[in-house]
Image 1 (cartoon, rainbow, N blue to C red):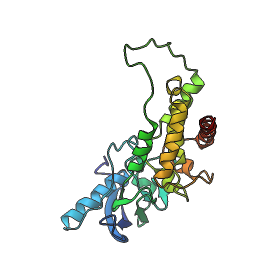
Image 2 (image 1 turned 45 degrees about the horizontal axis):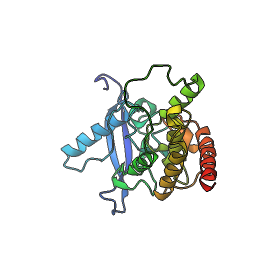
Image 3 (image 1 turned 60 degrees about the vertical axis):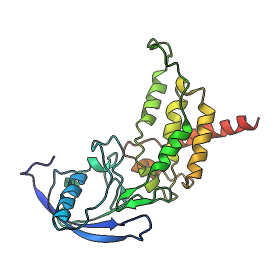
Image 4 (image 1 turned 90 degrees about the vertical axis):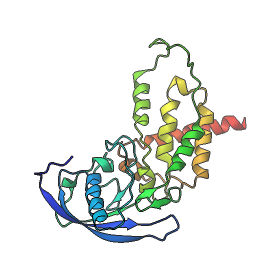
Length: 257
């Protein structure tokens, strides 16, 4: 939390307000006064909402949970950047010291056909859940705990799988893409298991089902600009997409055989 003695700034927010999915929505100018520079962006939103409630106005709806950069719920586009101007940072990790006094900050929801707005800055990202569900499970023995060396995994592959597993499913990659593609998200989930022996039995079925569900959910195609990786708060490598394309091609060929 911000210190009571920290420096404070005054800001002008231009926030997207939309009551329902069917509402056209609009930007609303809201004053954010006396904001501690040590506050996080979400804490600033809390301060603004508390004041709106005291004034009898509708608070700004936005998603959040862990506030530690883990859950991926804090989906906002800040001055045109998913999660804000800082690289490798979720909205909840962005602090107001990155802004200056009297600055105008434009805050809007992630924009994508597959992410319809629920209200204000809150969007429906259950399309990601459907993609994960389409991937299914792994065929592992759930009996006694195996010995640590029962399934040896080379360190390079373990590191590779871990780097892909750091994806928090926030959707910043989709918001940053001109085509609203979910390829970076899906590739991280596919490659996480594709390089591990535990993911081998369902390897081909997994990539085919997840790619098909992604397409059915209304996400666009990848045009290889790399904007997704730049916007990712976990800096998931763009190389994952090329590797998933290779996985998909091999699985598709085997299916036709």
